Amino acid sequence: AAKVLGVSESSMKRWCDAGQLQSMRTSGGHRRISISNLLDFAKGRGYELVEPDLVNLPPLTKLDGGPDLRTSVERLVDLLSQGDEKAVRSLVFSTWMTGKSLAAMFDSLIAPAFSGLGHQWESGELQVFEERRACLIMERAFADLRRLIGGVKSTAPLAAGCTLEGDPYSLSTSMCELTLRELGWQAENLGSWEPVDTIVAAIGKLKPRLFWVSVNADFEKSFLVEACSKLFEATTLNDGSLVLGGRALTKPQTREMLDFSVYCESMWEFTKLAKKLHPLTNSEAG
Figure (cartoon, rainbow, N blue to C red):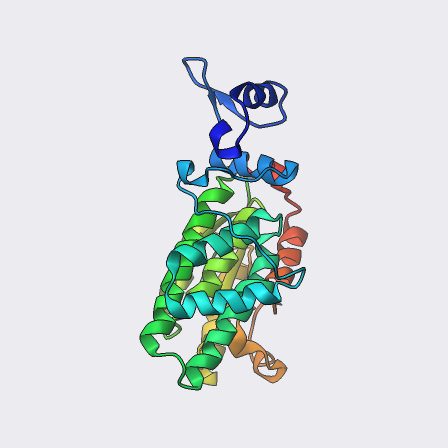
């Protein structure tokens, strides 16, 4: 841990013993520090990661995008279209290390970047394999974030979510899971392309306080109406809330036909909802 931050072992021990850096003692008396706690400490104190590779983390990238991350968005689009996984992971990790919440990063960096990739695909600048490769690369970057966020307490509220059968867009439901986990929820992403009946079964078995459904594919109106009706009934019977989102539901007239508890246009709105449902803070995370 000392080598990762480029400090002395004595400083690391002093911070642990003073309670400034959360750690635990092993049976042999050694101090054990989780990666998530080490990174929280580094972000809070402004320490750079000198040797992140020692804990299997990508190198940090200098960010020049300013508050709106405009330059970083353009850079991310280029890296994803080129299939540069190492650089993508580095950029995503570096952005998170600036202290931005995952919700803010998803709204201001990830979503705009994939919107840009979508425009490239529509105009023929990007092949299908390149677009799908970009999604897989980002999923692996999300796996980094999931590991770095750390665990949550078993007493934290439960949430789950997915996309409907016929909707292959997996990134948005992954972002919902990560956003809630950073807030301290027990969040479980059930994946994409889930049949309605199995989602109803999952709601009945898991009984989540919140169930999200991301809708990005174009569905027949009759299918959406029936699906949301069944899911809303299932969540209501289990004292939960059905939360909808996704670019296929941006038109108010589409949402007017559907049964749901809340609609969120962004991860920022999703965060506000989660905090309202259960005002859990990061300090309560395990």
